[in-house]
Image 1 (tube, rainbow, N blue to C red):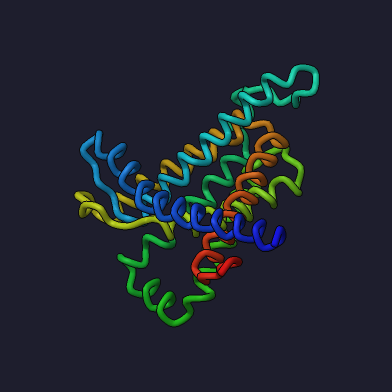
Image 2: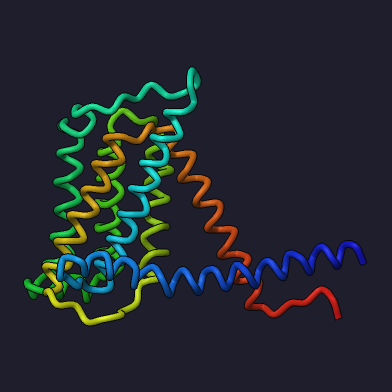
Length: 232
């Protein structure tokens, strides 16, 4: 009976996790849309999800910097300086990311790109993901390789999660191209914030913590959908 009671507690927690995901999915797009709307702009749904993710990761970077500041003698030696972002690797990473965004945007304007995407969608997406991941790894100048790879994998996962949460609230008042450009600017600014101020280990630990938390919440949410009950 004790084991069944403990199991029921987990199942009850799963219901809360499912509610949390539903609320987060319902709120993230409107909140970001309202923030952008302060400037009289409404972008597309995909662009909104990209901007939401950029803001989310930027807050993690700021949090990692604040956390590191209060560690005293145990803090990482990672000073905030212009050379963190004004260097060849970050410049090259920005070019690679911009090329990836341009490649996706050209689907609308160049029939040959649209045809390639229609005929080889998996290959096209693989190339885009390769460029995206390469930009992150290259851009994280001076970071341990394992930290760069963890962050890269996390960013790919977050992009799917934020894309899942995106839904249209009001129709955009700018073109798809303008939406993509605005979202890309937010993403680049986010990347510059990360490499500029975030201590590598503190930031990576926070990312790992967030990934574990998200996986746990998603797992509990899925458990609640099965309708299992430990007690009669």
